[in-house]
Image 1 (cartoon, rainbow, N blue to C red):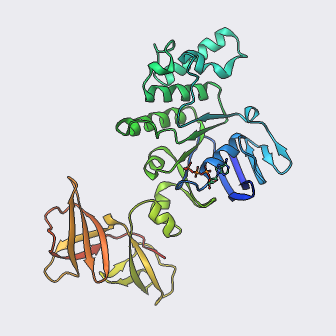
Image 2: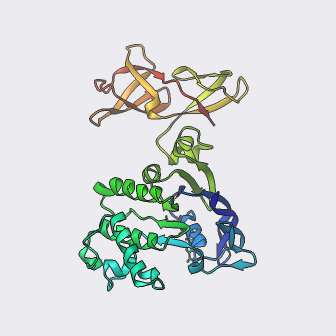
Image 3: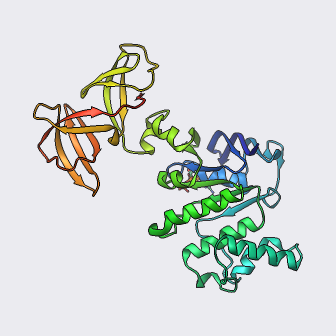
Length: 342
Ligand SMILES: Nc1ncnc2c1ncn2[C@@H]1O[C@H](COP(=O)(O)OP(=O)(O)OP(=O)(O)O)[C@@H](O)[C@H]1O
């Protein structure tokens, strides 16, 4: 069952339309990343779900209850949403325990104490209940903000760039740890980020934004391997584009030769197009008569990043073959995969 449904949501700031009729569904226990460059509307959508931003048309439904539409607006505190911000937003004058229990004022003392202990164990902060936020590391503060949001048992957890203040060295570990906590408790979550790497690690599903629209939504693999357009392809990683002509229902002709597709091509024979080739899809071999010439080489330990010139094209190629040198001629083959043509 869907926990959150966003239906044709439009939102504007003083007449400037920021969300242009968005649709998004978050299933129970699913973690969805709102991914995109700065200013494309991710935070505005998160704020609209939280009830901190009005919508001008469309509907937002949380657990089958309409919380925002043309003629209704449920205040933020009645939506059952928990929020985690980039700067943690802890109350500096309250202890860890008081911060975590802040939303649970109405429960009796024993219930509050039990919930506190459960939350401290969950986020591995046992023993730190009486500390103040300034006595904690950034990662510990973020864990307190997660405990505070989860203590209240929200229907949906909303996270706005929650990892951008965490030291890069521990960020990945922290993301996996928090992901595990959310999964264990079947928490549905929406998470804003401009980093595809964070989205790949933390989310089950990616909604990629461009100028107030979701251009593609799906799992990371789907978006990476079958992007709907060049914007999606380029946002998710380096890609090479080569001119191509469809020569059969599963092959194309290009400057590096004939390339076979693992899946059937939908374009008719003779179609002129561009093929997307990821750097790791291309294989290099030293060959005095090869079509390419290595023009740059960067050693990265287990692979080399090469730039290879083929006619007027410069291709980025990641190869485990470390011994090719600048100026060397090479043959280029393509690993078998489902080709993407634009
Ligand atoms: N309070 C505001 N008043 C007017 N315009 C705003 C306001 N907040 C945001 N905007 C505009 O709305 C658009 C979307 O902003 P939003 O913050 O949703 O983008 P974002 O994708 O979250 O970006 P970032 O990653 O930089 O936070 C931007 O053009 C921004 O300038």
